[in-house]
Length: 221
Image 1 (cartoon, rainbow, N blue to C red):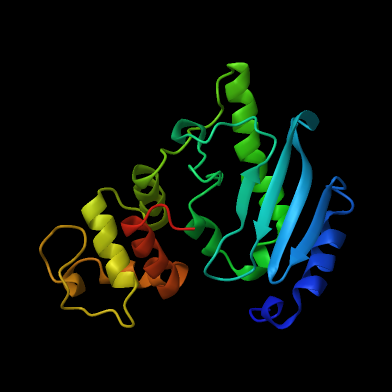
Image 2 (image 1 turned 60 degrees about the vertical axis):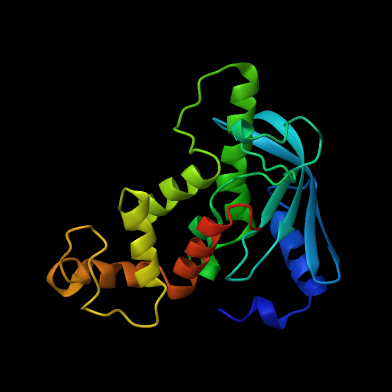
């Protein structure tokens, strides 16, 4: 499964995605230009089973293990500002990319993307426009949001501890003589080595490396 999407042409993959959309999202159309696969059209925002709103969208789709799909609202309704969770280039902040990439590829389907983070993003926008209270805590924008996200992923608080843990997870091998990331000043073999090994099973080396790179460059695509 891991290499399936990399072996087929963009045209074939676009047709697969269009077939996936037919029943649930018939107003979305898939096209491709070179290696880029684009999904455009009207996206219905469901709330309690009813269509609350619709947005014109564009998605630049990605099946790779290093890039998450990119979402744009193309109707001009949402300003490109941080407190609306939109970057200055128009990219919607639906999640921190590593939150998506951490899942196995077979779980990163287009329908799951639309039903989950895309729907939540636009439902939040619609409730915000109506002046209604949002039913969940929205994460901070920018570097603060990244720290919040990675902290939730690895179960830590504090930027220094989170960065240190990600540094260790990004290494080829875990070494017991490292100073523990928790701040105890102990060798990790005498502190949180087993916890770090357990984290390694959930957070692959490449995800930790991407997270560290993004902390140094929060605007990275």
